[in-house]
Image (tube, rainbow, N blue to C red; front, side, top):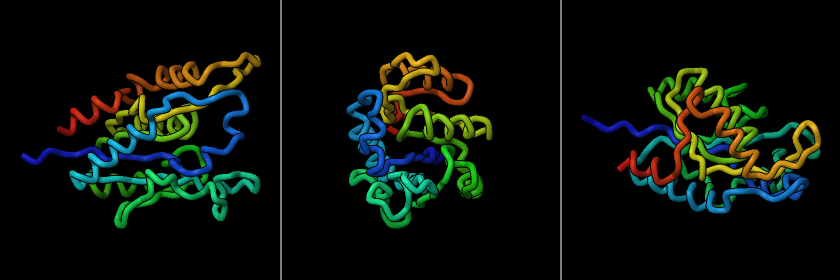
Length: 188
């Protein structure tokens, strides 16, 4: 029996994430995320597994994610190879206004592994929708990261707190939160 490899979704791994605007309230967490994502990407490529690169194509004039800006380019470690689809999105969810769901269903991909940035924004929105659409979804805890933020009352929350709350909101209802090692072990 052939072992099915889930589709790997790499969310918004573009140079724009390095823009200082994201650090306005403080630094990020998960400094090993890029290496973990690289490890996942290499494992998928070695198995000829399905990979989808999600790219944010902002329509906001001052966004570093806007097409034509240097920030719109993929980060070096996450540049798509020939044949790896790039799904452009204009909202936080990779499913809204895109053909991602149709492509996944047409190829009979029922399980997804999601990593990328920002945990509490595009990653969370994409994972929520994936779960709601019935995909078996795994979110790679150490394969995504976020930044410190002020909450709605103005209290500063560390990147770890923001990240942990996002994971808590998702785990068990929309996805299973796992670490890179767990996902690589599932592939082995």
